[in-house]
Length: 114
Image (cartoon, rainbow, N blue to C red):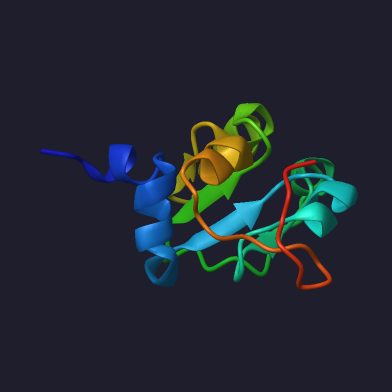
């Protein structure tokens, strides 16, 4: 049986639960513009580390994504320290793209991982 933690670290599971969670993309602005998940909240890692994220709902789980899963690991730990139920999306946008899940560029064209 899959527990909640495993469920919210897998890209397919996160995609299936997008309506039930907050997806925070902690990549840099140029990466976000190249391609991001519709409905994601863009908070670059440095901004998050400096205290950004006050718009997040503490009652709703947070899945954090970056390019490969390294920055989002740090971001999820920071959010956990602030009392959020936060999870690192393993493999990041590279895994999202590899799984064939949808994402778009800022201009509405097909997304790419930068």
